[in-house]
Image (cartoon, rainbow, N blue to C red; front, side, top):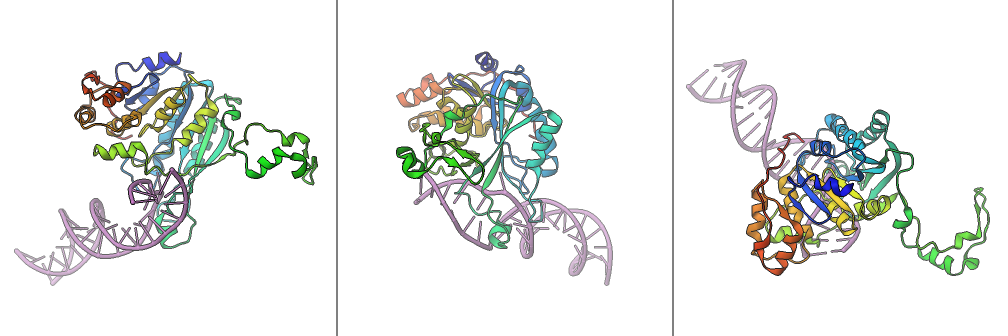
Length: 354
DNA sequence: GAAACGCTTCCTACGGCCCA
DNA sequence: TGGGCCGTAGGAAGCGTTTC
C-alpha cells in the first residue's frame, strides 16, 4: 500500500530515491492526494510561532494555532489507525514581555479536544549546545534562564499506536553495568520505603536501558556533509535544521522497516534522509523549492565534482526539473554527469502565504 | 516655501556556550 | 574551529502633514 502512495507522486517530484520522493508544494494540498490510513508516521518540525520573523517564513503567534490546525486535521486523516504523529515545537515569548507563549500547549489541547487526537506521550528535546537566548531577556537583562528545550508531542489516533521501546534502548549507566555484573553486591531485592517492591529481576540484562522522554541531542553539525556540500557549491542551506538523531529515535521507535514516513515541513529533508538510512519508505513535502533542491546533497556520499554543478544549478533554477537522487549520486561519483535524469513535467503551484 | 513635526519602517547593537 | 540564535530598543531614513 505504501509503495503505491509513493508512486502517486510520479509526475511531480523534485528528486527521488528507491525508497522515497521529495516534492515541492503546499503540504495541505499534497496530503489531500494521499488516501486515508496510508502513512505510518508523520514527523515534522513546523515553522515556530516566533516573535521575530525568520527567513523560512514563520507565522504570527495570533494566527499560528489556527493555521497549523488545518494541517493536523489532514494528518489525522492520512495516518494509519495504529500510526503516530510527532511534532517538534520550540518555545517562544509573548511579544514585548518576558512571559512565555502558551502556543505549543494550546495547540496540543486543541488537537486533542477539537480533532480527537490522543497524547501518547510528551517528549522534551534538550539541546545542551543551544546558545543562550533570547538575547533580550537572557543575555542582556539576565532575568531568564536560557531556553534549551523543545516540546515534542507524540500523538496518535488510537490508544495503542504501534511502538516498541526495545528498538531504542540506550546504553546502561556505569552503575547499572556493575549491578548487572554482580547484582548481589550492589543491591538487595526488597520492598522500598516508597512502597515499590523491587525484585531480583532488577539485575536482568535487557540489552540496554529504557530511554526517558527527555531526549538529550546536541544540535551541532558544523562538520556535516550537508553544510559542507552547500558551502562547496555556494548554496544556501536551510537555516533551521533538526539533528537526524531526533527523527531517528521516533522512526525506530514507532515504525518497522518498509513503513512509510512523511515530513510535511521537510526543509532540508533530514527526515527523508534518516528514513532512507533506516530502510523505511519516505515522502517529504516542502514549499520552498530552493531548500528542497539543496537537500538532495544529503544523498551524496562523495564530494560533488565541479562537473555536477551546472546540472545541480539547473535543478535549483528550473522549477520544472526532476532528478533521480541515486542516479545523481552514482554519476557524481563516476564523473559522468550525462546520466543525470532531468525531465520537464509540471508540478503544483505554490501557495503564497505558507 | 522651508522648516518642524510625527509617524512608520528598516537596520543594527546588544550578548554568549557547547559540541563534533 | 565552525556553527547555531525562535527578541527588543533605539537611531536612521523616508515620507506626508502641519506650522510659521
